[in-house]
Image (cartoon, rainbow, N blue to C red):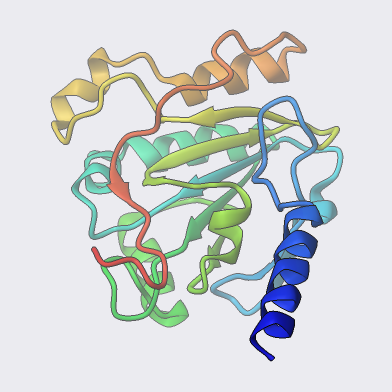
Length: 207
């Protein structure tokens, strides 16, 4: 019996190794589609925005790095600037219930109104499914998807990994640069950068 059980375990392990492993989105590749409910109860699908530039912004308003950009008005300014130019801006909250940054739809909508934020929609991802699909590591972390559905930027919002608002004016804004270049039909000169901020509070994480 032991020998048979061992044999089955070996076979099962071999089958698992043979299965293709899911891999997160990478710059230069097709951005994976998703279907996530926003704070207004609408199911948002990336495929619905084919033909448009899309920004994905991972957020956690309890994170001091996120607070740096919202309390200064920087994130709202960027949202307004680019959505007025036709860019779709989807803020994503992947914090699990009971962890920093978790919010209900009603609470988030109230906060958005209070701080005058202007994303196209806020996606609630408490299971972390969307976050893992794009391998989002920090808040904030920014992604830019082209009208053809290609991921053209993944990384930090800028090059000043601090919580100091004064650094915003001195920073090189990678997101703005990527959008300006991409919308002008140019290649993004800095397609990736190391994201900074608080770790995304996924289900099962100990922090």
